[in-house]
Amino acid sequence: MNDALPHPEGMGMPDICTMAVWTGIEALKEFTYSGRTHPPGMRRLASQLDRSQGANFVLWWAPRSQTLSLEDGWNKLMHLREHGPTDQAFTLDHLKSHPAAA
Image (tube, rainbow, N blue to C red):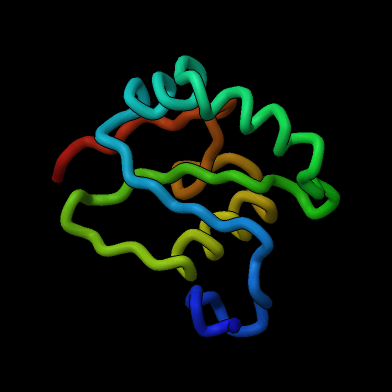
C-alpha cells in the first residue's frame, strides 16, 4: 500500500524512513549515542544500509514553526549527496552552527 507513507514523486517507497525534530544537537547526540536501544539497533542497521548512492542520514536547521514533510527530508538528503555538507544539509560528523535568529 504505497499511499500509507507519502513520498516524493519518482522516489518510490523507501524501505526505511524516519524523521525527527530535536531541540538541539545535544539532545540528538544523547539519544543517538547514549540510549539503551538506539545505538545497538543502529549498529545492526548499519550493516544493511546501501550507501552506494551516498549519505542515508541528513540534518538541517529548521524554524520551530515550520511543518516538515518527507519530501523536505528527501530534498535535503539529495542536496547532501550532491554538494556534501553545507549550511543547508549536513551530518553529525560535519555539524553546522545553528543560524542566528533574524
